[in-house]
Length: 348
Image (cartoon, rainbow, N blue to C red):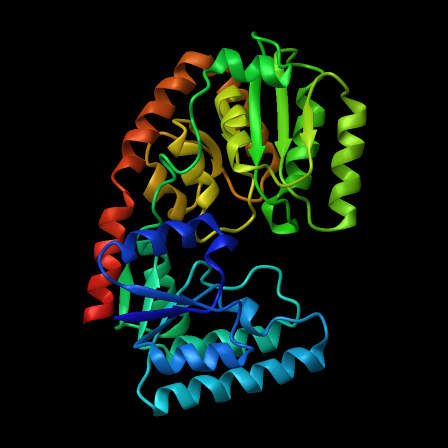
């Protein structure tokens, strides 16, 4: 069987792992950068399945006219694919698109893409429920978890080595924000809370790592780092794969102050390094983290603040215990099992 995925596998660890593991079972995976090329049409002719990911980016453009043209062209392309009986799969990593540029148009595109799909893959029961309640989809849905990152990133350094590398004090309590920094990910709330806590808790040592999108966020975070020189680490750029282990293993706990979430690869990344996480109390996260997270009420700075204090008071060893339990949970989400579930969905 040939499967066409019109997005480069190198663009995301999830795709690299998914493609590598389904190829082990004899699937030939074809790739194009996007759907806007003759190469896509050629490969679509050869493939039995066209598997779409992050569908919001198929049509998204800052310019309304450009997005409108892409919208109509995408509708025409997928209508033609349906006519020639190509099977279209959509993995909904986000049940609704984040940071909509043209909200009404993107909402319509989501509904059309979901409607034309032969099969829809979601990562949790919460997403399945939303599909039913919001989009009216009751069939053609498969729940296939997001796989773990165990073994994907190098993980050879211990806590002491990682802290020496990053010049973090041995007795510090390190709270790590890791990953792409965008408006909906709640970094503003986190900075507000950290400004209140750092003068009180001398052991608190925030580390903020990841590429920031937007000048405003970049400016705000850099301002924070200048206020607390020597009491935090800020690195606003893409972290190479081989360096991820230093930040993860130096941390006592992760923090994910997101305002909204459907699936979080970042939570899974922390779990894959045996770290627990301070996270909003939302169903998708509860499904993967269970009782071994430090939860706060979403969009509530006081609750976020209380959760960070709770983690500090628990201390390093309790965080390590929670981290080990979180790791045990995520081990069950191995990529071999996920590849088999994906193949089953292709076959039915």
